[in-house]
Amino acid sequence: MKLHYLWLVPIVLTGAAWADPPARPDLSGVWRLEPSQSEIHSRVPSELTWQIEQTDDAIHLIQREADNKNADEWRCNTDGKDCKVKDEGRKVVISFYYNGPVLVELESEGSNHDNVTKKRISLSKDGNMITVDVIHLMPQGKPPEKLVLSRQPTTTAQNH
Image 1 (spheres, rainbow, N blue to C red):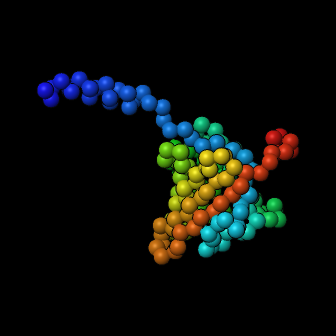
Image 2 (cartoon, helix red, strand yellow; image 1 turned 30 degrees about the vertical axis):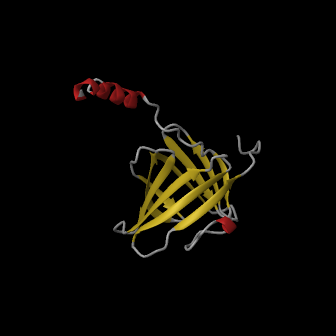
Image 3 (cartoon, rainbow, N blue to C red; image 1 turned 90 degrees about the horizontal axis):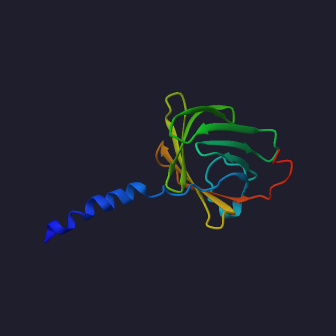
């Protein structure tokens, strides 16, 4: 009787291969930090804005502080390969990849890459908020953080 079920295995495995990959979140837009909803223990400025342009295989992120003079700009593929960028004037190596509907960023800095941070960026169901879970992998002992950013209305100037 068990042999009758063996024909199901190829069908089930084929169905899994044909299944659509999990939908990637639409992170494109302008996002502003909501300090009252965030849990911050490090040097994150209270007035922080992210401008994200997302394509199928890459992320372009512009990070601005309150004065808008200090902007960091990153372009990186989402295939997990390293990108060398500057963050607040420091040389940093980042990589992005998707884990289902979550965009993961790994960031390492320091002469021996001994400061490693993992960020898990997820979009709310209504698409109006992103949550960034920050995990300090090295050195150990730093508490995790959570950044909550809200989607800002799009202006004509931002579209050009």
